[in-house]
Length: 92
Image 1 (tube, rainbow, N blue to C red):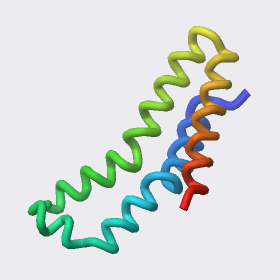
Image 2 (cartoon, rainbow, N blue to C red; image 1 turned 135 degrees about the horizontal axis):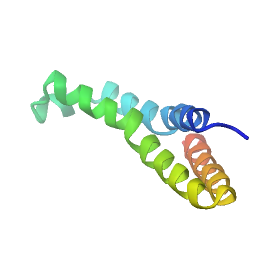
Image 3 (tube, rainbow, N blue to C red; image 1 turned 90 degrees about the vertical axis):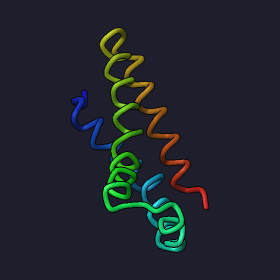
Image 4 (cartoon, rainbow, N blue to C red; image 1 turned 90 degrees about the horizontal axis):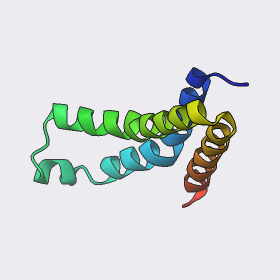
């Protein structure tokens, strides 16, 4: 049985590949987006922090809550989240 911190680490790692890397790539390709929207450094830092930790934390909380009620369901939900993130990381 894997612990909750390892589950969180797995979700953060896959979310980094699936969500954060494309977001940072798009911002690097189109820096004018930040200029047009008059984004400050704190806005960019918040965007990156939410991209890196927002979705993984929400998924992890759902896995922990579901696993507290029914342990098998928590494992299944964790696997489903990993599968979705892995599939989205493979998309072009």
